[in-house]
Image 1 (cartoon, rainbow, N blue to C red):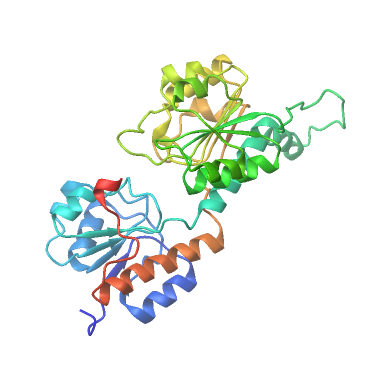
Image 2 (image 1 turned 90 degrees about the vertical axis):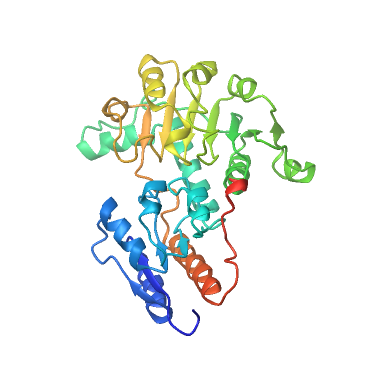
Length: 328
């Protein structure tokens, strides 16, 4: 395989520097229009490629993998999350799956803090008034938000991103709490003065802000369901920069409309770009279009990881960021 260039199909536009490097190394087919591939187009791409480079906008399920044929050997995902890929089915068919972990932790944590500040300090409401020209000048009671320092932040999922959020929030004077499958080592907890809650329910009932930073897996689907959301204080705020499926979006929308939760900052949504229209109408909600990892530096680093995974595989070795189904 190493003597002949691998055929690589990339499903979406990537940063120019990444695409140029791929052209040098591989027999690469790029998507110049950045138009999302249909299921049929994706299946056809998998039949003609040694390596597919998809993104989270490409749903690769067992039925699609069954149409892939024998040529496809590696799915080198552009992104850390692989919940859009049926990894177990891929491995059963002899197709390896790699991802790009650890690249976007700081960028996503920055966005989580931006959403926390945006909701609590009512920044979008202020921007809307300025953009429509309705501002009549300063007033002592206008746009009163809350003070971020001193609030209890509950982090749901204390991996790389959760820890990065904790470091930033601590600098803002927030109290750090977290729920995780496993408790962190004492020295890691001490770094951010974090308190571990074995019970998610008990943590939710006591937090002022909840930041969702866990991956989407079968066990985390609707982890914040209607019952758990009702445990939260009516003054609490929810922020999600992870995956939309972790929160029951309809239940969250109902509670925000009823004043049972004070506000929400969402970078991800349960049904992709199809957002509940009632959610968009709420003044106490900040919505951004999945921008958590959207920095030039982060996306270039992702691309570099994809290239390393493909190049390592081409050289006959295990990709460094191989996804193992049993560890998901």
